Amino acid sequence: MNILARVKDFLTYWAVKITHGMLTCREADQFMVDYLEYRLDPQVRERFENHLENCICCRNFLTAYRRTIELARACAEPPVPAAGPRMPPALMEAIIAARKGVSPPS
Amino acid sequence: MEYATAANMDAAATHESPAEEAALIAALRRGEDAAYVTLVRRYGDYLYRVALRVTRNETEAGEAVQEAFISTFRGIAGFESRSSLRTWLHRLAVNAALMRRRSTERKAEVSIEDLAPEVDLERESQPEWNFTESVETQATRDGVRRAVNEAIDRLPEQYRILIVLRDIEGYDTREVAQMLDDTEGNVKVRLHRARTALKRQLEPLYRTKAI
Image (cartoon, rainbow over the protein chains, first blue to last red):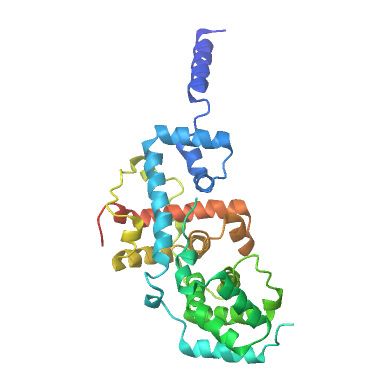
């Protein structure tokens, strides 16, 4: 075995050893939905959390990602229902009237 | 992820005790007119807002709610109380709204690639965020509410609907896949893209105090 092949083997060995089990940012990205829904296998979850511990970019990404979900939800409904869109009164009356044409439950 | 959905955040508006709900269901099963009126008046506005979120169209939302109530009138005998009446109505309204939504042509949309590139070069420079307020406080501000809802509306429809069904209405990924007749895997990929695109649009809100 020539020297270059030995160096390559040595580097490959350590690269695998050092990064064993570590996710890349791209892999971590693909697990975000399942992570937030607690649907990752325990081993994958551990690897994901290890990645977060070591990667400030992904940690910050996840923080804003979570905040986005929470904000979307919080802003969907008006603070008080009366402040949001209301069903037009004519429609409400039409629905009540429509019931008369529907067979009663059996 | 445990959270309050828009559906249960609005629970106070339509809240009734289990005994009251049981009484209402019993009266509906007996076909009492007054019970139907109570049902429509109690849940009408709430279901209308749900349908409006799904369809973004007042006419379609109205039709969807009407269909949901008619389905309720017809199906109340088969209602098994495994879920609350409210949850059942919610599902009927969402399904009816989804059917309306499918039948209507949508306006031209911005591409998801423009909103959230698949290869995100900015990912490496995610800043430390400056959240000076809780989500709840931030969401009381009209400017923030408007910015968030406009950002959701800017998403291409096949992405927007996932934010609505999964994150706002609170259905799980499997249920959303069933509703949209798609695979769970596809839904997850698109949901992640939709959230990422929405996050990008809302990032200015995470750095400043208020709009």
